[in-house]
Length: 246
Figure 1 (cartoon, rainbow, N blue to C red):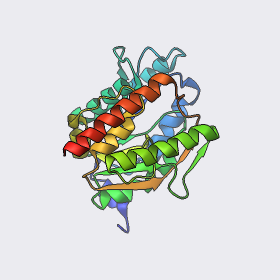
Figure 2: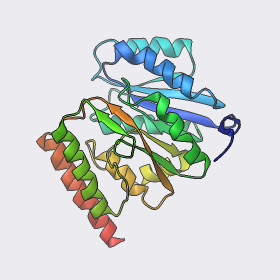
Figure 3: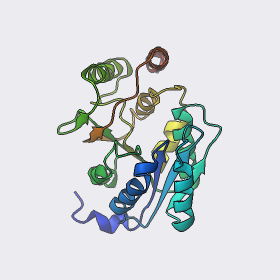
Figure 4: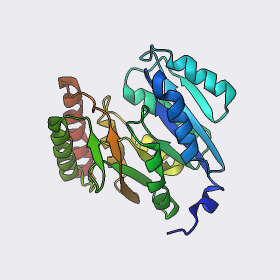
């Protein structure tokens, strides 16, 4: 492992992608913490994606911060129709800026910015993607009901079985990519319209050099309604067929 990774980070440009909705109470503190843990990079831009789902003044706050600090970029995306649209808009904004690495992290401290340091050595060592895992020791999940955690673990096992992946957490959204790897994943196509898209991205990365690091997740997981489950099942079957066909 690199004895002083900060020397190499000083030559790299990092984009951070975070969709936000109704996060006014924690937004400024969260953005400041992300800036603190990424300070060793040559350049950092934090792309905050906002749309009509946010009604508590978060947009006004982020836009004011962006006017004062060029490290913060407010991305207004009223055309978004789902969480996938929000992430995709952020990814494309980051890739357009020709950054070296792209970090995806959720707002509101559901993901802990301080744990970003666990990701860095793996990409410096040549990984294409580094995925956060709630189930890799000593990762953990707080505030999510037991039934939701069991479904998440079961879904990961089923996805690994059908898709040929080998990850301990197929639905986590805390992840770091080289820009080239993220471009290949997006070009492969993201068809899910729900949170299963995180699994779809990992499927497209299955032939790449990937690593997992433990993370602490501190928020209730998205609800598993019939629409979400239906989207997951349809796309799991589709990707399984893609794998079979080679």
